[in-house]
View 1 (cartoon, rainbow, N blue to C red):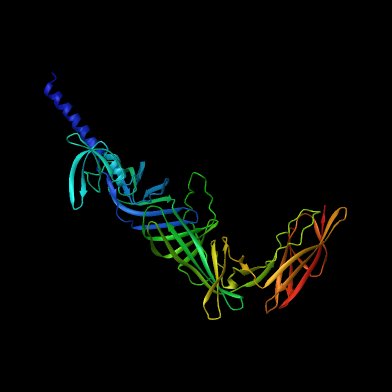
View 2 (view 1 turned 120 degrees about the horizontal axis):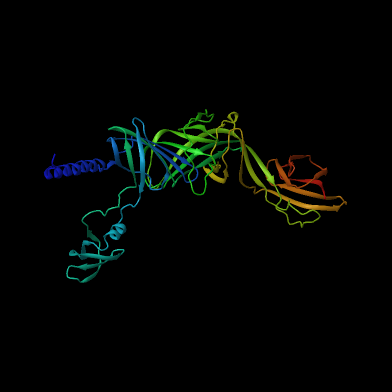
Length: 476
C-alpha cells in the first residue's frame, strides 16, 4: 500500500487539532470568586492575630481550574491557608497570593516606556498631550511627545488604555485546582491574618461605704487586617497563646466545652477552649477595615469588696549588717480587693484589661478615683486593685536598733501610722524578708504570708496614731 502525501498531511493536521483541543481544554477561563461569603466566622486573639473561616459556592469544571478568590485580608499569612470542598473532591495543586494592589504610583511604574495621554490643566482649560512616559515623581511626569520633544508636566488627569498586567483591585488568592467532577462546589476557606486584636476594659463603681461595687466590662476589637468582614460570627480568645518568631500558631479548632456563666446576662457566651477561654458573640456583627468596635462583655452588680490600706516602706530590702536613715516612705496605698466567685455575684473568667474606678460625690455625680490593670483571672481567684494613695493616712518607719549577735543580725523597727480620718481604720504593714528569719518581739501579732513576706494588721483610731514595734533576727 502506497503512502498518500495528502493522507499524511491530513494525519498531521488531525494531530495538531487534537493537541489544540487539549491545550484549549487546559487553558480554561479563570474562575473568579468574588461573591460575598455565605457564612463568615472571625476569631480574634489578644496579640495581633485573627483566624478567618468562610464559605462560598462556585461552579468548577472537571479537570484543571484556575480559581481567583478575591476579598481575603491583605495581611493574610499564606502559609496558613486551607481550602477544601464540602460536597466534592478537589485537589489544590498550586497557590499564589496576589497583593500588588492597584494605585496611581504602581500604574505609572508599569507604564514607564509606554504611550499615555495626559491633560495639562491651565485654569479652566485642558491641553491634551500624547507621548511616551519616561519617568514620574508624584504628579510630575516626563513625557516624550510624537515630535520627539521632552515635556516636564505637572498633571492631575491621565488617560490610560487598560490596567497593567499584574495589578489587582483586591487581595486575591490564585489556585490551580484539580476537580474530579463538574459541579457547584461549596468551598471552605480558612486562614490566619495579622492586624487583628482585642482588649478588655472595665468600669467599676463603688458604693458609699466602699464595701460593694458594680462592674461592667467592654471589649474593643481592632481590625487592621486589610479587608472588611461583613455579617460575621465573632469569637474572642483570651489567654497567652505561644507563638514562634516566624510562624503563626495553628488554628485551635472547634472542640469547645460550654461553661455556664454565673454573672449577669451577656451578649457573649463564655466557653473553655484548650487552656484558654473563648467569648462567643451571640449575634452577628460587621468588622470594617481600619475600625475599632466596642462591644459589651459582661455586667455584675453588688460585688462584695474589701478596702485595704497598705503601708510598705521602699527601704524594706537591706543588706544584712547595714543601717538606714530615718528618711522613710510616708505614703499609704489604698486597695480594693474582691473575689471572682459565684457567691460574690461573679464567678466568670475575666480577660486581662484596665479597670477604671468611679464613685459618686455628694451630689450623686460619678467621679474618677483611680485605675489599675488585671491579668487573665479565672473564677474563684481574688482581684486586687490599686486605687491610689490615701490623703489622710500617713506612715513612718524607723530603725530603732541593729545588733551583731555573732551568728545573727537583729533589727528593731517601729512603724508609726497616723490616721487623720474621722473613722477608725486598719492598715496592713508589709515587710519583705530574705533568708532564715525569726520575729523575737512584737506588740501586734504578725501573719507569715510567705518566707519572703510578713504582714501586720494594725488598727488605728480616728484622728489617732498607732505604733507597731517588732524585732526580727536574721541568720548570717
